[in-house]
Structures are given as C-alpha cells and as structure tokens.
Length: 187
Image (tube, rainbow, N blue to C red; front, side, top):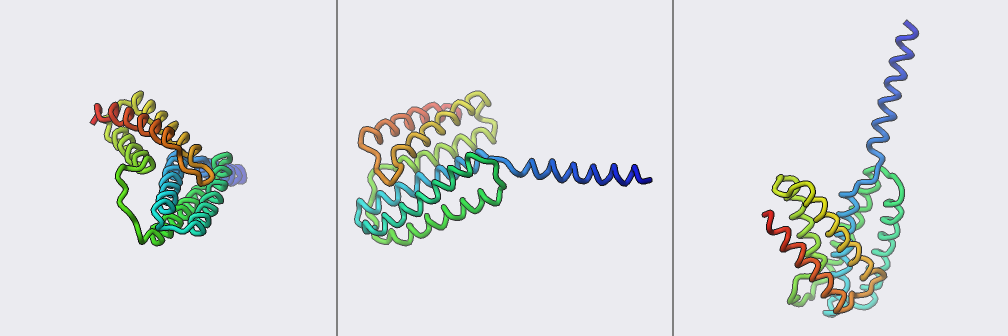
C-alpha cells in the first residue's frame, strides 16, 4: 500500500514538473507579434514627429518607453519565460500604441503604405496560408524566414528612434514587394 502511495505521489509531481516545463518556453509567435508591434509603434512615432502631430518632447517620451520595452523584450527572448510575462509585454505594447494613437489627433494623409504595416499584413498572409494549407510547409518556412529577416533588418534600421534612410526604406520595400509577389502565387 505504501509503495502505491509513493508511486502515485511521484507520478503527480512528475506530471506537475513536465506541465511546468511545457508552459515555460519562448514562444516564437509572441516574439513575432511583439516585433511587429514595435515596428508599427516606431513608425507611428516617426510619422507623428514628421507631421507635427507629436511634439519632440512627446516623441522622445514615447521612444524612451519603447526603448524600455525593447530592452525587456530582448531579455525575455534570451531566457525561457512564462506566457504571463509575454502577455505582460504585449499589454505594455498595446497600451503604448493606444496612447500614441490618442496623441496623434492631428494626422496627415500618408501617401504610401508604411513598411511596418506591410510587414504585419504579410505576416498575417503567411500565417493564414500555413493554417489553411494553401501554403506548402517548405514554402511556408522559407516565407517565414524571409519575413523574419526583413522585420529584423527594419527593427535594426529604426532602433533608437532613428528613421530609416530613403535607400534603406527602398530596400525594405523591394524585399517586401518580392515576398508579396511570390506569396500571392499561393493565394
């Protein structure tokens, strides 16, 4: 009888241990989502400053907040963390985005689609194609690698609040155009 109780207790602790290990891991979808949000927020700040909808002080305050979130993101990406920590980071990004949207009362028309918005839209197309099965696995992995590379390069270009140079924006746009053209073949 004692052996049965000990065995049962060990099994329960084993299950608890393994379930804890399964929930404490880095989630690539959370990383991609956070990176996309950071890109879009960065563009909103830059556009708001260019159009005059944000004052230099406001934009600096938002950039400082975004930099703190980026630092936390980098730390989370390096270690294994719980889903709650990723949700907290996502919540901070959402709150910052909403705060910037409220401050962007005086907006001007933007002639061209922004790279951040295009990255988000293409990520959604890739995800939808993979989920629906329209996109074969090998192509899905290739497209995901390409969009991750573009997103990473764009984040590096706009790090620290700087705006991408015209030639950098043109290169990102060219890469996005190429990816979108190839992706549309599977739609």
